[in-house]
Length: 403
Image (cartoon, rainbow, N blue to C red; front, side, top):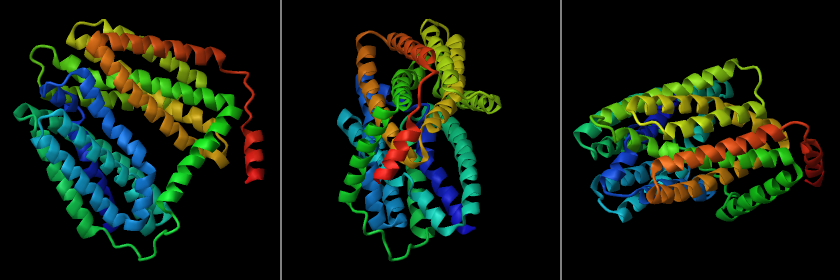
């Protein structure tokens, strides 16, 4: 029982940073006189660092052990909050995001692997469900707290996050059980690099053989590219209206979370979960982004953002279903890893391109462009879906025979 409580507490404490900064982080950077390009580059830094360090961090954690790796992730998160708390320059913020990316890379999967070791399979299933509920609740509470604290002092969000990260580190060092001395020595940094090469080579061969997989991965990448400007720029747009403080921005962020949850609930009741359903929802989402760009009142923009989040709540589960349905079991983990890598690259490119376009033209111009591109790509996917021969069984059998 103690392991379960520690597991849930650590997850909530680590995700507290994302919760309390979720609604106001972009506004914090704008308050430091950074432009849209600089802001997007800073946001993208942690994403690309996490992407680059995911596999090396996993290999290193096998040598350090789960407890030490968790403590290390906590220390890195503490450094992140200190840098944001005292920093006032572009270089310091970039450094803070690098530490954040490293922290997320070391935390990723470590706690899950630890709790699996100390609980049964049935207990794990139950505790993972609890984890999602606890984190969702914590994110809502922390998001509201972030807005209230920011109205008092903008840097206060990082002071509160620092307290949570210190508690995270102390909890891990005191309450996490020590692992056995036996380590997975066979997994070294070289093996991790070889694993990355294998992911790329096998996935490329698989995607070349299977046109459906290739189309879905490409569309998901374009989807992320188009959604990025709305994710980054919604808070500056809303905060630009008169008498809109950080608490109201936090409340808007909470309503956005509930709106996406409503979309998830609708998908659960939908019988058809096809690629065409995902494409149709994406076309509507693209139209909503274009309409959003032409609204000039707070209520209309806020309502448009809620519609956007509701549609994302529909699209995300359909996207996961569409991809997993096309992948053979023998190649699932490899292709999903490759999919995550490609999507991360597109997200990073979007941050740079859209940040520059927002600087040259306007934020609303990036929304219009994103909406048009999303509508076009989703329409193509919808019209070309159906009648394609799926070769996954043939390729899977051949790959299995070669193995």
